[in-house]
Length: 147
Image 1 (tube, rainbow, N blue to C red):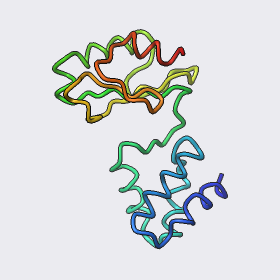
Image 2 (cartoon, rainbow, N blue to C red; image 1 turned 135 degrees about the horizontal axis):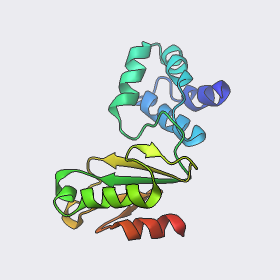
Image 3 (cartoon, one colour; image 1 turned 45 degrees about the vertical axis):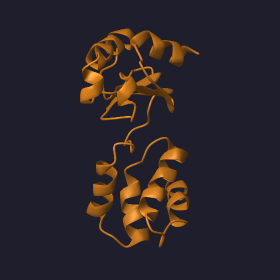
Image 4 (cartoon, rainbow, N blue to C red; image 1 turned 90 degrees about the vertical axis):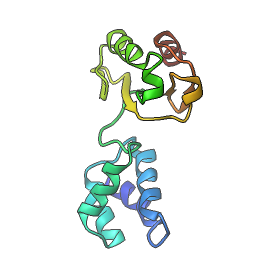
């Protein structure tokens, strides 16, 4: 795993925004940002481990655990809440037996809250396996993950 992390990061040392780009590549290759990434990135970029942790924790796109086979991000910002996002959240938790921010036991689905997907005018919004969906409901999400 360390070799994969090092390869994903090393090509971005010295670039503007290189740490973020490198972390994205780590996540693309591993499915998440493994804990040892912090130490390796700090060494490669000559910064403290606290700085690396700060970047990882600041950006909501970075995960510290492997997601399920399907990854659902449900917008829970005000615009989406005002048109039923919390009801969709409850529906998904019941439908898939998983809490928001977690992966189910079978590692089939991960459901995460996100605070804006940029679809406020056609809320509620979700992203399912990288695909943005406007005016979403629980059934539409279920259909997407089963197709």
